[in-house]
Structure formats: structure tokens, C-alpha cells
Amino acid sequence: MLKHYHVDVRIDCHDIPLLQCVDFSIEATTAEAIIHLSTLVKANGWQRIEQRDARARFFRFDQETHPDEAREAGADNEIPTERGSLNVTADAFWFAACLSHSTLKVRSQSLPISEIAAFFHRPWPMLPRPAGQE
Image (cartoon, rainbow, N blue to C red; front, side):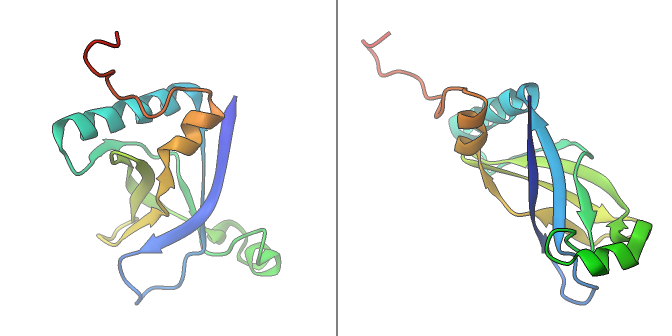
């Protein structure tokens, strides 16, 4: 089972042509890993964990909202990226990458971990039970 995402792009700089969307899919094993990483972040007081992952595909034009522009762009609609990563905080995750041959970072919008936990029927939040309730 897969959960497909088609979400907005966040960009660190406004001096480049606008990117509109990013697509990626999450399977159950990745959902479990995201949930586990979030518990590590929470338990250790970390800001986030970043892990290599290049599954996200970034697009200039959203094929759903701007089909003519996406079709006109053709193969150039997908923007080549490198150094892709999955980023996980205590309660959210997102995918990020650098535009190829650049240091400019792009990322998906942050998404709630509770959403993938519910979709894959995984417990959330994964918090230790209070003493005496084992």
C-alpha cells in the first residue's frame, strides 16, 4: 500500500523560476521509519533528523492546476535535483533537495506524521506509557 503526495514546494530563494509542486510516495516501511525517527527526535530533544532519500520529484508546473504549461514544458517540467533527503521532526516530515549543480535548496511543505500514522494504521503518538500502566 502506498500513500501518494502531491504538495507545494518551499524555496529558500525567490530569484529563481517558481517551482510549483513536488510528488512522492510513502510505503508502510517508510512510514514506520518516519514514526520511529520522530520518537528519537522527541526523546533526545533534537530539532530534526535528516536522512538521504531521493524519492521526491520537483516540478516547475503543477500538472493538475497548470496542465497547459506542464505539457508545454514537457520533459523540462521536472527539475533535476541532487542530495535528496527525508527530514523528520517530532511531529512532521518533509523532503528536500538541492537543484542540480547548485547549492539552492528546495523542499516540500511540512506534513504531519499523524496523517501517515493514521493512513497506515500505526500508533501515534508513540510515547512511553506512564509508570505503573505497563
